[in-house]
Length: 406
Image (cartoon, rainbow, N blue to C red; front, side, top):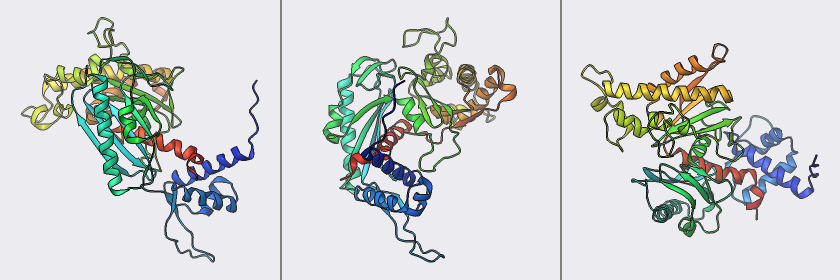
């Protein structure tokens, strides 16, 4: 057994300042120094000193004092600083490029989506467009917050990303493989801020995890599943991503529904994406590739004269829902999560898909007679991967604020 080294004075100070930063940022309110001392178990003198350092670093800020009915000085509320340190979340996907700039208070300082068809695109040209988008985002953010600093950039990609490297192993729906992702076009606008890559479903799942007390109705453990052209999934256990031994878990779209089924761009046959991916659903409903999935359920296009779903739309959604539900039941049997969170295009179709998925879970999950399952719409649907990426950057600041102290 390898012994854990004892914490020295320096590392203890770093741990304490991170503890205080988390107590302020994750409070979901406006705690005072006294509240932080109570929450962390640190002395008030220690908390006051550490809060002063976080204020100097523009990570935390003070609000005007609040009068108290009790004797003594009024409490000074503490909140995450606005418009100082920011996280940039970017996404490359088949139908769009997107980005967002978030600050520590959770405010969106800039956001943009560039629609297009990036299947089979030249990676260099596409990443150059992503760099241009990054420049526009930061120009917008700096117009109102000229002194902001970029804490980091997270780029979401729809495929297998080698953890800790800039290597994209494969993104079947983009047609990219074995690619060393060149982020220099992004770095031209973000300076020496670290740029990391991640799987888009994993980052979108992080956007569903409660942040600063928001959308606490999401359980601590869930399986996030989203659809675009492909299908991505991510496992969240106790609010932390479970990424597997190699960091590649969650490839739900390539679970086999029928070995004799249609060929998938990944090279296999009968993958779930060929039954419940958006292209497959639109094709089954008789709509052209690239149509908005909302057309499936829109009154003008997706309903017959009686107001019911048109037969082709209804059949396409039934086929997708049953295939998705059966596949998710396998996941639930394996990892025993209590909730399914439907994101991406599935969030728009949740009213139609959720009952079908729930029925498959009730039929196919062995523990169903003694368990309950929830199938819910993702609270963060649009641009979820960019939001999750930006939040992950900011979480690193909160978990290690010492790097930002003067």
